[in-house]
Image (tube, rainbow, N blue to C red):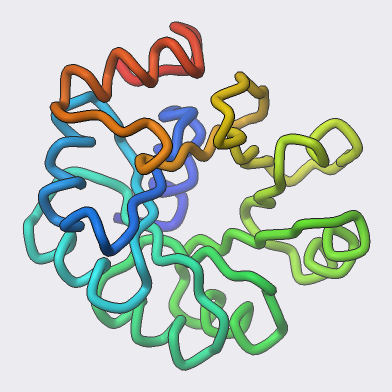
Amino acid sequence: MSKHDVVRRLLDAHLLLLLDGDQGTEEAARDAMAAGVGAVEVPANEGVAAVVQAGLDLVVVAGTVTTAAQAWDAVETGAHAVSAAPLDAEIAAVCEAADVVMIAVASDTAQVASVLALHPDFLRVPAELAAAVTTDTPVIVDVPASGEPSSGAVLAVSARCLDARSPEELRLRLLALVGPATSPP
């Protein structure tokens, strides 16, 4: 999948489902895909390999990457994008060299300014910071664990906070959380 295709699929999906290693990454990714989710963020270590090897039709984001070595490992195992906190010049160089999507995670306005200087493909921020961010870079907004709806180009939702027991339940909880305009089909 080309970098352009990954950017387009993330924007079209409007949703990035965050999976953690405790959930059985491959099974959770299968459930997400069955629920209509098109993009998942999985742990940068074994999570990427498990989802890529399963051959699922998902955009696979490696997160949260903190070093250039982790970024290379994620790219080599097939990640389509790297989510980095903090994004630094070394991680940005890996993403550029590998031609993969770079997602910069920022938790405050000072971080926003510094990571935008590295020209990420996406900026991911907490919901309470989203309104203060003005940029041409597409913004991924973390939906709070409280389940309060948010708005952004793409919403990031933790699967753990949704606590769904089946793909259909996951689909319904996503609909309730993000609404029909931004939810999976």
